Amino acid sequence: MTNKDTFSSYHPGVNFLYFALVLAFTMFAADPVILVLSLLCALRYAGYLKGGKAVRFSLVCMLPLGLMAAVVNPAFNHRGSTVLAYLPSGNPLTLESILYGLSAAVMLAAVILWFSCYTEVMTSDKFVYLFGRVIPALSLVLSMTLRFVPRFKAQFRAVADAQRCAGRNVSEGSVRQRLRQGITILSILVTWAMENAIETADSMRARGYGLPGRTAFSIYRFEERDRALLLWLGACGGYLICGWAAGALDWRWYPTVEGAPVTPFTVSVPLVFLALCLTPVFLDRREDAVWKRLRSEI
Image (cartoon, rainbow, N blue to C red):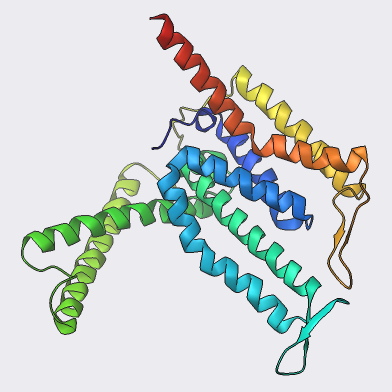
C-alpha cells in the first residue's frame, strides 16, 4: 500500500538538492558503510512511496544485475593480494576483487532505487519549473520522455485489454498467432504515439511555445518550511563534503582492503549521511503522527 509523501509537497529545488546529494555520495563514495546505508534507506523510502509489493518486484528485477556485477568483476579483475583460488585459465581469484564486485552490486542497486524514488517525487512539471529557463529545449525533451514511459505502459494495457475482449489475446494460441497479435498491438501503439506527438506539437504552437516574452504559470512557492529544510540539507551536505575532503570516507580495495581509521569524526560522517537519507522518512512519519493525533481528537 502506498502512502502520501510529505517530502513531495516541498519546493522542487529542495527535492532536487536532496536527490543530488544522496546520489552523488552513493555513486562516488567508495566506503561500503555509505553504500549499505544508502541501499537500506532507498529501500525504506521506496517502500513508503510505492508500497512493499513494488519494492519486492524491483528487487527481483535487480537481483540478476547485482549478481552479474558481483561475478563479472572477479572473473576479469585479478588484482588483490589475498588469493583464494586459481581459475581454469590460471588467473587468480582474489578476495579483494570479490568484495569490490559486491560493493559495485550494492551501489548499482542503491542508485536504481534512488532513481525510482526520484521519478516518483520529481515530476515532469517540477523538472520543467527548475530548468525550463536555463535549458528550455533539453528540459522539455527530458520531461516529455519521462512522461511518455508511464503513458505508453498505460496505453499498452488498454490496447491489450481491448484486443483480449475482441478475442485476440496475445497470450493464447500458437506462436504465429501470438506474434501476429503482438505486432498488431505494436502497430496500434506506434500510431497512437505519432498522433499524440502531432497533437502535442499543435497544442504547444497554439499556446505560443518558443515566442519571446512568453510567461509560464507555476504553483510552486518557496515557503518557510522549504527554507528550514534547505538549511538542513545544506548543513548535512557541507558536513559530508568536509568529511570527504578530510579523508573520513577514504577506502581502498586494492591491493588490500583498507579504510579510514575509526575515530569519532569518521563515525559521525556516516551517521550524518544516514540522517540525510532518512530525511523524507522523518518528515512523512511526523506528518503521519500529526494526522493520527488530529483524527483521534475528532
